[in-house]
Image 1 (cartoon, rainbow, N blue to C red):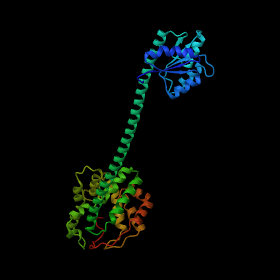
Image 2: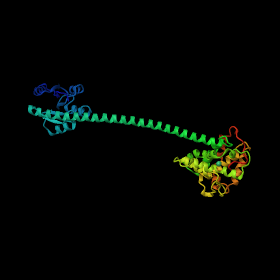
Image 3: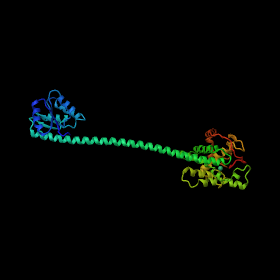
Image 4: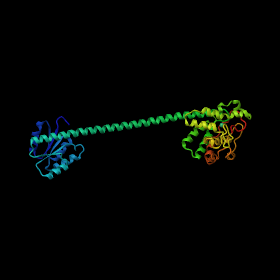
Length: 382
Ligand SMILES: [Fe+2]
């Protein structure tokens, strides 16, 4: 509210306006006058008053209509309206209240009453102004808060995205390192590294056919390449021996399973734990004639039984320095013959059910350059 409260008096009779002006000016109010409803609305639009003294009976837009329009407008609805009228009938007062009148004065206007009514209305207006200002502050704060919240959410989304990227990079680097170490172990004997690409994917294809979930499939894909990592610990004179291994040498060769498990043991990373199990059990046989422990049937963990089929199928169908690949059909026949003997029958069934995917993997990851290493006698580790 300004320092001098603004009072607008609306009356079509000049002498009534002069009378009210004479009474209010000495009280320190800024006085505006209008002699019609139209003029009153113009003044309100240009210089909103703090209170309106409004005559009812005027030609043109009358007092009821002025009140209705002021109360219908969001900007002017908080301006108190004091109806000034000679009419005392109840109907007119009810109609004035419906139109939005806040108070009443009866003509002829008494100075004391005018002073009291205007002062009272100005207090209400001051309170309304305060509440409106408070409400606007609240709305501004709310908007600022929402904007801040939005900024914060965008910042969090951006950071989360960066974090995910960083995590993916670390994960990729970690997997890449594992893969290269696994290839190093493969390179140490007869392979080029393609074996672990295919063998791990064959294992996933079989596991998917069995119905394992995506999370375990991902773990198998990361873990299976490490199945022969224990070959790092086998002496070259045995691993690279170009002739058939003596029984005691074969016993040492078999230890690549245990060595691999020892290399991988103690990790709290899921797929490394899984790799430990695969390294330890991928040469166990369903009939109990495998190694290193001679587990049989379901004593062998499922991933061990799966990786056994995948490993042998790839060994059979791959070219090695000492042998040509066996045809896919003959390899399928060998796997089928091993059903219930060397291999878990349920896993063999899953292998054949995934035949299309198995062949697609084989085509996608063909043998690359021949190995530089010496030939071994027989199928290693089979
Ligand atoms: Fe092996």
